[in-house]
Image (cartoon, rainbow, N blue to C red; front, side, top):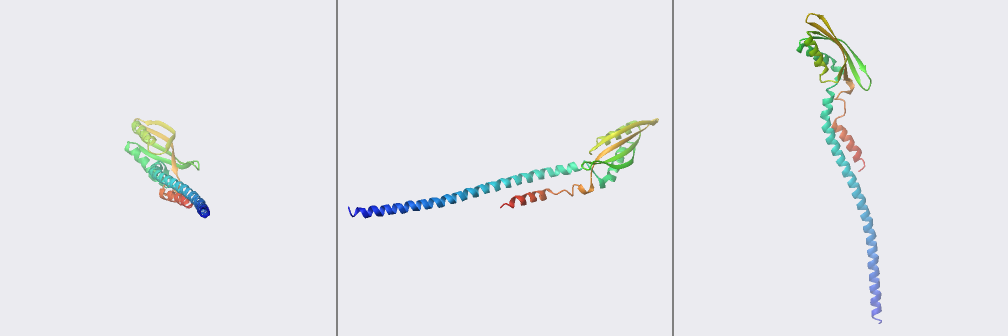
Length: 194
């Protein structure tokens, strides 16, 4: 029996050392596993942020053209002369003489507008076609007053007041931040967390 007792003691010591080593190794792996899980959560969060940025970039790029199109419906304060010339050209194209009697600013600070007083003269058909052409022009405009009168045989006149949406010179399409600037700012703010 004496020879088996040292073997049992050695086996117990080896088993104890093995269990202690296993416990220590398990606690190290548990800590590393928690660290890996935390890193995976951070990676998932950053991946989601990058995906949102990509979607935002795509959305902004797709609406950039829409913004330019919408800006064309407003008259810039510095482009009033060109707009007046286009109104007069519309009258000439339909056989009426068009004159701009006055131009002033109106609307609100949030929605600026130009107020134009116009007069068209010519045949009834030419005057009404000119008024219709102006009314359906590709601008943000509305006719606030309209009066049509007969001057003489085949001579009519129409006096109208237009409200035309405008864009201040400081808020033109070229002064708005570009899509790439906006996305770069978003990307910089999200990557600051890395």
